[in-house]
Structures are given as structure tokens and as C-alpha cells.
Image 1 (tube, rainbow, N blue to C red):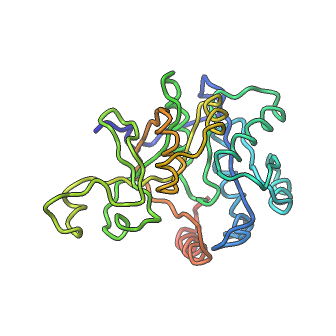
Image 2 (tube, helix red, strand yellow; image 1 turned 90 degrees about the horizontal axis):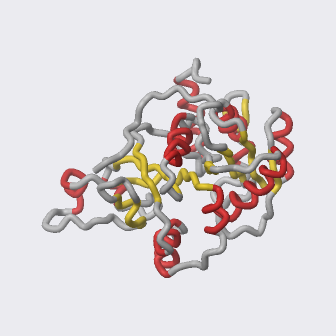
Length: 271
């Protein structure tokens, strides 16, 4: 299987031939952790961590939010912010509106939009940059990231989305189920018999494709799995997949935040 392997790269916001816009969606409302973009990690809010770690990679970057409290926090630390509608049904719709508003704000037309996860304050900034570099290939519509699964608990957790990848590194399907089935073995042996991939939910889009995606109607596979990316596959959009070996802390609950704080306490020099 062909992937771009996780490596150490040095990126600057002048390295891309294409104009790349970094978009950080941030919502206040959350069933499991309301207000999490404003939760404090050491001396900075989570949204400030994400913004500062990404700002050195992309020249054009902004937080996209529908909440004035988050907007005020971004403005406080000197970041760029665009307000989006609270009525969006998906993160893709929010990114598309944010892209249009950012183009007006910066006075530039984007070639690529990278959706940076607003709840992963320690993500390696090289990862979204690697995604953006995929679009040097003119045939790429969308790019995303996976990591190999090594724990059976993750494999059979429906909240852990699995990706099936072609030999050329393109997505074939996304599922909440453990796929493929490893026939002839007990489920607790599957991880040792096949390489399964966890989808990390970090996306980049060619700008014109992002706007077209918002015009697609919900599809059968999307509805069945509650996974929007299956709509794109059903409509023949190609999704390039890169692999990372890096672990990152995704903050979905207050318990995750406490785990992140403990990690920071054990790494006092971490910036």
C-alpha cells in the first residue's frame, strides 16, 4: 500500500505554489463539552494553542465560529476570525462559508482550503502542511489523514471511524464498523492479521471542489454510516489519503482536557 509516510519536514507559509487557506472551525455548543475552545491549557485557551501552532504554516488562516465569545477570544490574542451561520448542517458547509468570507477578508482567491481540527491543540503543524502539498497533483480533489489501529477496542468502537484505502493511496470507503472482516479468526486477533486504519478527520479541499460539495444531496451510504465523506465517494470525488504515525490528544470531553493538562505538566518545555 502506498502512503506518504510520517516524516519531519520544515514548512514555511511561503513554500506553497498554491494559495492555501487554513480554516479552524470552532463551536461553543457541544453536547459533551460546552465552550471547549475557551477552556484553558496552561496560560492559553485551546483555540489559541491551535491557532498559534498553525499560523507559522499558512499565511492565510482564520478561526471560523458562530459564537461572539470565541470571536472575542481570537481577537484578544491577535488572531483572524470570520463569523459563520449557526445553521450549518455539517462542518463542510461551515468551511465553505468561511472560505468565501476569508477570500473577501484577505482579498485573495484560494486554491486549497485546509480544515484544521480546533480540538487538537498538540497536532503536529507539519500534518496539515503535508495535506496541502497533496494538491500539487492536479488530479486530487480532497485529502485526508489516517493512522494505523493497534488496539482491538478502537477497531470495534463505532466512534472510531475506519478507512479502507486503495493501493494508490485513495479512499475506498469509510465505516464505523470494523472493515474488512478477517474471516476465519476471532475478532480479538484481527489487528494482528490485517492493517486497519483510523480516520483522523483532518481534511483539505481544492477550493472549487469544497464549494461544489455543499451542493450535493445526502447519500444513502452517508445516511447509513452518518459519515459525510461517503457522500463524496458516492459522487465520484477522489480522496487522497496520507498516513501519520503521530499520536495526538483530541479533546472531546472535560476528561480529555484533564488528560491534556496532565500531559502538559509532564512536558514543561512544550510550546
